[in-house]
Image (cartoon, rainbow, N blue to C red; front, side):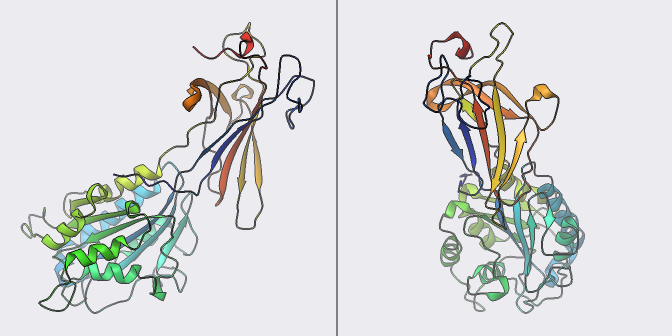
Length: 378
């Protein structure tokens, strides 16, 4: 699947490579650029990984879905567990809309979601911002749409209606910079359009692609009953063709084979892309007689762009102190600069804050690149 990278989270490694003039590392100790065999310089590396997902479930709620009630309940619980276990904190909007032809309501208010929202807002570290139930509990409740709506099943039209910017009931669900995944859960094929004259699939595909500036940020999955022995091999050719139009960003799984979590596998892979560590090629070893590199560095985690406009700084100690989280230095690859020293934090920092995180690194360096104290790792 094409991986869409955009710009929310920021990792910035600043190495103001400091000098040994007796000054502290809270400011460059050799501001004029030289201090004996040591000097001050800086390098900046910027990385961004989008960790926001808008997830829309379009669920068949006509009588055709009734035989699959148990599979739906178990499947939605499994999807919630998969998303909740994402190692990298993510921000999720999750909504459920009906695919039947008569009922346009949702279960948002019944499930504790504060009006007027029809979706649950889950902030990093699984904090439900606009509801009274737990994260898994809210997902399970929203998915209990029943089987009392009137046929025919029109999931494609229902999805586009929910995603229409003019639909005030779903205002705020779509975020321009977030991934969008639409999951169709159906017991029968799509019949969007007037009776006997379904809307051409090409039109529906174009309308969904137009929802995002970057079409590669759209994922489509279909969960259908084609693998259910009790109901036979039920085919949904329109839904299958629509889903396939999204290529590597598409997936089709069965209702009855415990495959529900697979519909979010690929998006979870994208959300779990780890930050590349800061990497420096000029780090002074303060004790060359000892094995390894004895780096004199300070590391600060800085979170900015918070809701109140403040900035939070968290010093990160060296792992030599025995504290955690802490930083350690290892051989790494510094891009075009080649082999160098990479700085790793042993455990995740507080990424539950809704802001942009910078990791600021300052180290002593060498003025002479041939100084043995700044020898590159072999």
